[in-house]
Length: 161
Image 1 (cartoon, rainbow, N blue to C red):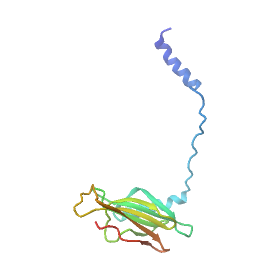
Image 2 (image 1 turned 120 degrees about the horizontal axis):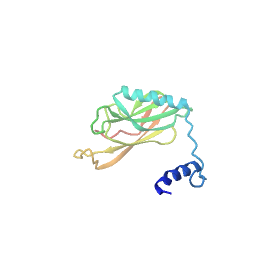
Image 3 (image 1 turned 30 degrees about the horizontal axis):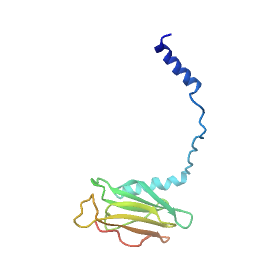
Image 4 (image 1 turned 90 degrees about the horizontal axis):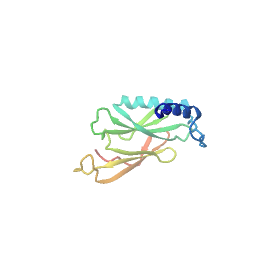
């Protein structure tokens, strides 16, 4: 028998028979996502865009102390060429409750994370006046924003632009 003719037949036979032993690893279970939790995120994206920013890929969440969800979401100015025009937007569910700064935009935000119940830690790059945008030379600054029941209260001020 010509080996070139037998090759396709053997491949077909192997596929039909199932090559190898069955896997002993169970298939991963899908993660359950409850639809009500997604509604605030959709609305929050819209608010960020209305302020002239594009939502970053990630966000942080924590409880608001009354069974609801607080969300901290960084955004980058629409049209920013270098990505350093940033702001953190805070939401109580789908209600916008403020941003990390009202004076304009912050320098590069390097981290947004939950910091326990009702609080977020936002870490900012810290630039000396002569630093290029690529290379902040000062120690990063972390500000904690804590929910007081009606607004986020900062533990300090983000570094100046």
